[in-house]
Length: 248
Image (cartoon, rainbow, N blue to C red):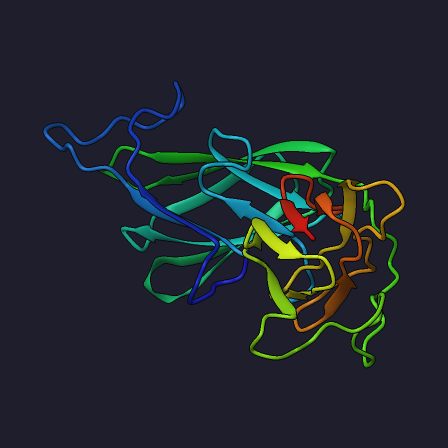
C-alpha cells in the first residue's frame, strides 16, 4: 500500500533460501537481502486492509474490494532488484531503497510473491495473500448531519448517556462494551477504507446495528432500547466483530 508514517502492518525480515532458481551467494558471504513490507491503505480504499500476521493467522494477508492492490516497502541494499510474481503488476523505485508494488487483475484469492536479489547476497522473498471480497455493503453512504439518526436521543453529558466507538485499524474499539438501556452509541469511521455495520444477533424486536458505508469522519448512531446482547460485524471486512451488552 502507500508509503505511510503509520503502516497497518510492518515487518523486517531476513529470510534465506528462496527456491532453486536463486543465485548462489559470493563464496564466504553470509549476507542476506533485508526488506520491509508496509501494508496500509491508499485514499481510494484499495486495498482495504492487511496485517503482518494475517487476519486469520499465517503470513501477510490483505483484503480488497476491487481488483487492484498497492503496498510499499524498503529494501537493503538499496539497489537490490525487486520482482513480483502471482499477478500482473509493476514496481516503482524511490530513493533509499523504497519501492511501491502496484498490482491489477487480482482473482478472488491471489498469492503474490515479492523477491529481492542483489549480487553477493542471499535473496529475500515474502508472500502476500490477497482475498477479494464481494462488497456485502451497498455503495450507499450513511446519511450525516442529524444526530442521532436512529431512535430517541441519548444524553450527551458526563453522566454517560452517550458512548463513542471507533472503527479504527480494521477493528471495532472497544470490541466489547457494557451499556445501559437508553444510552446512545455512536460509531465513527477512523480508517481510510469504508466500513459498514451489520447485526449478527440481538434481542428480538430491538433496533439492531445496520449502517451505510462509514468512511473516515463519518458516524452512525443507535440508541439501545432493549436489554440483551448485541453482536455485530463489518459487512465489508468479516473479521471485524463487536459486542454490546445492554442492561436495564
